[in-house]
Image (cartoon, rainbow, N blue to C red):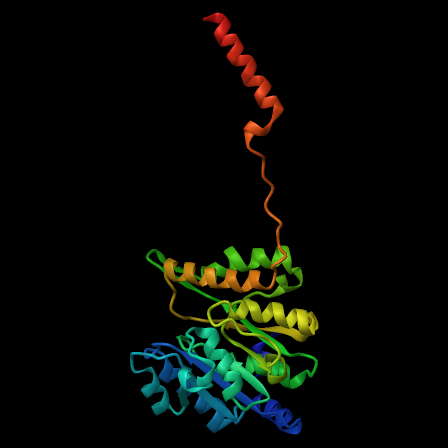
Length: 296
């Protein structure tokens, strides 16, 4: 699997020239739900660095799941086009979840390349976009590029610099190792920062919830091959850490998406049968019972 570093694409002038020479357009979608604490800084950074200063982005859209705080207002004031997910393809019925937002982004965004960035990043930087978009501009064989990074976990005893990504390490990585080992080279399979060609995204289904990133990787791998997938080191990402209850719900949605793609899986861990089914067990305890009656 091809692995890059965001520094490889930091020369934005060169990257933009190559994008324009190839006739490509790039859209950024930020899916949101109650992100008033971070969304304005994210939009301001992306507009300042990647629209006004150096026009890598042709479109900057926030697709919101129905926030009850000031997310939509702050995003619009910061310069994003803000759209409620429920207003896109309304005749398809209303669903909720991150995957729903991303699916509707494929319909709403106009770019040949669509980049996704989560709305809760505390240390936002333009690298979260050019690091994943860059490989797609440079290499026409690539179709899907994931970001990866260190994810500090804030805990009562301090900061664990590698403590984030608990669902990845405890659930997704073991599943990939067993059922799709080609994908085990991905450092952060659940990363919310990634980019893909429209021609890839329009060909794959989208689970409506948190299983969407896992499903994407499996479907892109099966449809286009492992050679279409790459990853970029984005250094560090700081964001809110979710509760164990939230992670439990996320894990359930990931499992639903995963096993929808492996319905034939029947392999189980190695188990011993019930002891009562063994002839040796019956013989041992029938002898013990006879001995006990004899000694009585």
